[in-house]
Image 1 (cartoon, rainbow, N blue to C red):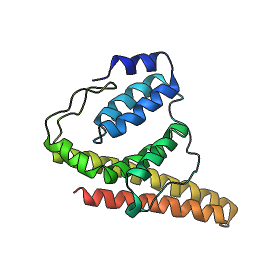
Image 2: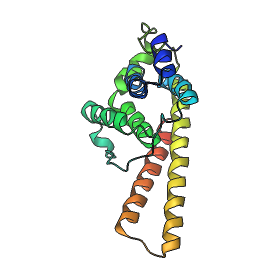
Image 3: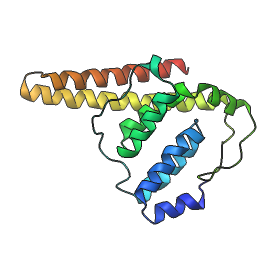
Image 4: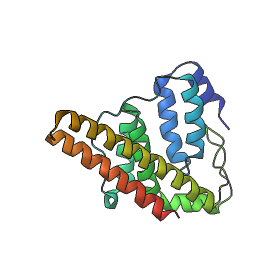
Length: 185
């Protein structure tokens, strides 16, 4: 359930406030149900909600994903509210907040937050299904990135260092998505 505060921010077109509320919801409800509801609502009204990925660094070393990295990524997402950063920060949150996610799945629903309706009661299987769905979305997105890069390379008939780095990033995104899917079967 969306809060009046969030609906008001969207209706008034306060883009920064909406992005911050969406960012906060990722941590408030690490199952991302609240975020997904809020995001879908905002996207219907705010065409400029998402921006193109700025190409900035993403921490892809899963062994380093902790709350500090999560906080850094959350700061970056407000500055570059792109689908790539959203997908990435969700992956980081799943690792950094795995204990909180586990508790949220076994505890009674939390009190409603200021931004939405609180934690939904969700079974572990539902969360795994959602994580598999998101992994498939990231896998598809990574495949599209590879296709775009290869089209550029085919036209140029050569690879430069920028193309190589983009290909590595896309491949890492695909590998991370496959691992997430496999880990949630």
